[in-house]
Amino acid sequence: MQALEITRNTEDTRAAGEAFVATLPAGSVVALHGPLGAGKTTFVQGMARGLGLDDQVTSPTFGLIQEYGRPPKLIHIDCYRESDLERWQSLGLQEYFDLDAVTVIEWAEIIAPLLPPGTVNIRFEHGADRTQRRVELMT
Image (cartoon, rainbow, N blue to C red):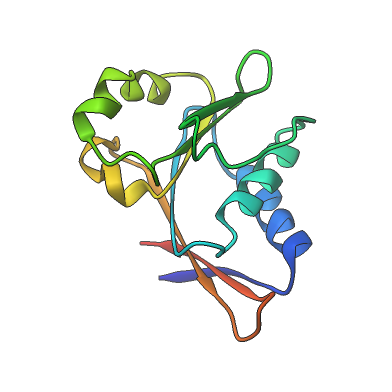
């Protein structure tokens, strides 16, 4: 794995997301992996900021899918509460991969068989203290 960033606080994690999204073309799918509280949603907040979106980004854990921007520029998916692949297919998951948007998926390992080729995988881990995070590009 290649380290993207060691962040010291939530603003650093947002800044890492903001910088990262600048490297992605529209249509990219980004899979986020890591334990609860490791900074995945905070990173997505930075991605939204990097795309110039003013929306308040929150975890779509209960709603499963949240679209930000008009037309949608960021699709935020959270698989934590739904592990049934057939349900994801019936929700039209693959249609989101064809949009001219960046699609980012928390807990993506749950739907790994449904992810398109070329998906960018990022791992988040807790750091040495309670505010530090390690953000790594998985190769």
